[in-house]
Image 1 (tube, helix red, strand yellow):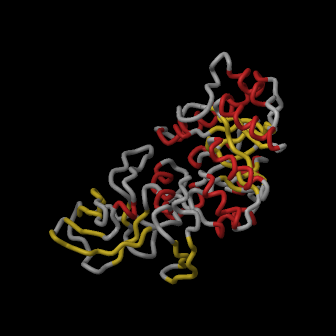
Image 2 (cartoon, rainbow, N blue to C red):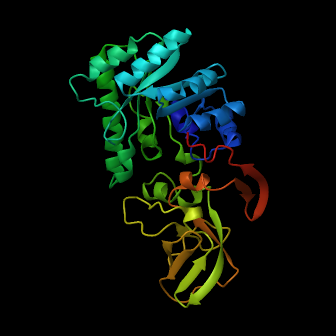
Image 3 (cartoon, one colour):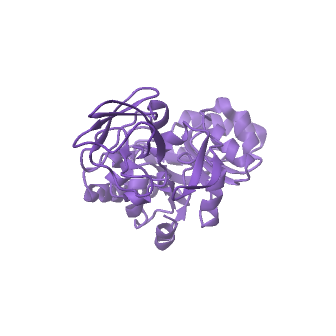
Length: 347
């Protein structure tokens, strides 16, 4: 990912919500990333404590958190998004009253329809101008997340979303008449296309650090690229066509996978512990809190009670938030234990 960003002349700012590990963040920065993103203020505080000095929150912060924001801003280069002029005005008033300046970007809704101003609204350019002129705020530019890319039905569809995202941001910047030093986009499925789009200055993918079944389904990774796997144990063989693993929803989560073709089940069981090759005879069809029910689709499975199974999860980011540590391995040998330092930081 760093090589792709470099080739396109873009800055890479990985989203650390995938791994939640200052150790991995430092690895990314050592390879050329300019800083990181965090999902929540609590995550950013953990990474700042660990020595990460440039953190962006592509998340709308409420002014109720002002004391924490200003305290963090004294320690690191901090930036965050706004998408509501009234909230931006509150931050402006607070910053002006304290004699401080806050770095902000305006979040733009490029089609995911979650957060962000509507770039097609007649008032969009005026909103950008208004926020950019507020005292106490240093306007850095525009930011978006093409989350709807996860619903793309083909490689071409993903590329079209990346192209349209970049065009939308360029057009809004031009319509506002305000200098936008940064045009920031972030999503792993579209990143390989976004890196080639004119006007984009920053890429913010997160999932690429681990990848998962969903990214394989979108052509962003191969099975062998998936670094995060869950090591599960067979705890029961109650029927010839049923295997029970000890990795339930508290481990694999209930997140479904998405991709260009149907992706049933809650993760992919691999053929053995050393090779990233799915076992097509096994379907993880149901999760309860502590159990994963695996249906044997064909023949007689080799698995017996006590055996270990590697599972590539549907969504690695949420798996990270469910465990205290990840184990770095080479083959079947443990190399290092990495604490998931920022897990559970939801505020």
